[in-house]
Amino acid sequence: MTGQVADLLFEAKFLKEIPRSGFQFLGAGKESVAEHSFMTVFIAFVLSTMEPEIDARKLVAMCIVHDLPESRIGDLNNVQKAYVKANETRALEDLGGTSSLKAGIAGLLSEFNAGTSAEARLAKDADQLGLILELKDLIDKGYAPAHKWLPYVLDRLQTGSGRQIADEILATERDRWWMKNYLDSPESSL
Image 1 (spheres, one colour):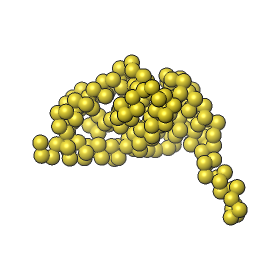
Image 2 (cartoon, one colour):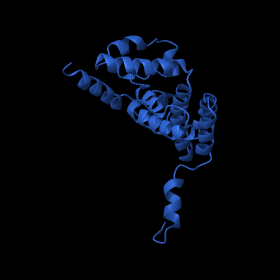
Image 3 (cartoon, helix red, strand yellow):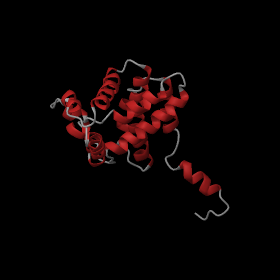
């Protein structure tokens, strides 16, 4: 067992080095798979407060591992997926960690991919909401082509809570969270 957990942790850490490949087609923006995963997990946490009947721990755990196989197979975008079939099953078999950790991760990924549980649908929405947030950020910075992607990503949302958050993201400027307080502050001198 020596080193098995460390192997898994180093493998998960490697997601920081793998760029999300879809941004190349958009022509702007960038993030690593790990950055994307963090945002997905945080969004899942928020969704869990909106849907208290779901298993919040399972939802968050599902989002933590949803892209873990990409440490071995990379981040294939939709164009690449038309030509390349990633062997996620083999990537999971070769995953580092103890057998119980591997089984737990495989179970979460299987449920996520099936998309049949409430947690899986929310996890998929969290995944898409992360992209919606990135697209809105680019739009607010003046990058108009991001508008083209929004309808397709919005169409993937599966839950009312996901659609509610998407509407709020789209109605809110990216810098509102800090600028409102800054401009209302007596010390402000913009």
